[in-house]
Length: 605
Image (cartoon, rainbow, N blue to C red; front, side):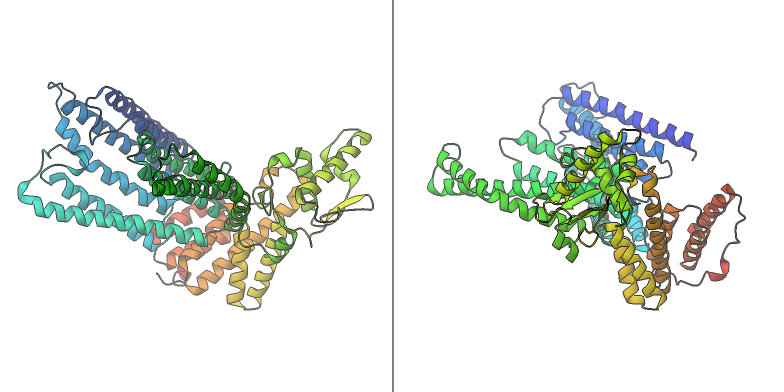
């Protein structure tokens, strides 16, 4: 499908979703009685309109990516369910007997949830690359399709009241097929449930083994899944309370996390913010849970035990508040350390000693013991840039004249000398806010030049380059197991190119290129190790990583074709070979023949 045709279809489906949402909302506002099992309010339509909106945004920009189309389909199917429910309620319970089709609308509602839920395993299996990662993924796709077919076949002809459209009787129910329909539906639902669980397991395994940009993309979707889980859990806990409206609104509102996370991950906009978001969620979520537990224990639990009302016992509320105030600070520090370990892994001995680390592969951030340093701590952009320049120098001195010319070009020296001193003091304050070390512990000032002491300041790009060199050396020496572990550690560190937010700064170019070339070497080495051990999916993933960084890497293209052909995935191999030929045509280089001869290097899984 061409880009223009894809955009036309995407906008058409989005427009259809808007029309359905408007019609469903209008019927939901005028229906009577207001409470039935077919309740689908305006927030429901608004929520799933976001699915369609994000879907069209992804589909237009990335028409070859299935996630945009899946989000469009989810939005359209959920909107159609809401419209069917609203119409059935209006037609059957609205007091107007001239409206027809109410039972038929209820029948559609009774099974429309099946294909809607069937898209969920596909979303987790195809995210974020749009490709199935293994044969288990393909098996789960077929299980999902079969489950949808069986569940629909059983639900469509099951006699009696329709479970998802109470109290409507199935107008197409067959009494003679009662047992068979229920058995068929049960098998289909079990298959769907198994596919759902299986897709989550595959997703978790991919998240555990992912590295670099793909790891951040998967983290966004995992975070969205946690938000949805919390939304539905809190909604269930609050159901039946005085705030029932909030309980009913939380689940659909929490679902908004899925399209938002998908858009951020696939379009790669503010991708690295997931680390900060997860850190803050762990801290604030833990604090909120602890304070809520203290309040419930004292005000509700003890109040009920001594026979006082919740609203009347002011003394217990004061005690609960005092205890919460006492435990908040130590709990906050513990949660911050746990969040840092969750996001950035266990600190190295150097990081533990320094209590600070700098991350500049991908987004730039300084992570202290209490978490990432906020932007407000820097006071100015020039101070952040000063630290970045010193990192790019890799411990070599940078003269003050060079720094002043780079940071404040075309300004008078007598003005910028004081500014450089202020920026230097700011960097030291950010790295050591508690002033535990001497001024020159991290930033050394000597001979009219500044440099970083990398023995005291852990920097991820330095650690990555060291692990990459060590792993490649071990591979050359034949230490397969040790080299694989070291190379994987290096791969996990590479979350993106060096200082991606400073792509056009000359001072960042040499180290960025060195780190990128090292990452390509690491990926190639891991791919070759995967080929040797028969790990088809691992080899494919690494070659795709290489091509994402360098689409004209002929060796990676051909190696990927060989792996696919050897694994028996002949159609994918042919498609990849055509992509290889197309890329080389762009730069006027002749393509090598299709690599038939090495097709048996890897046995099919």
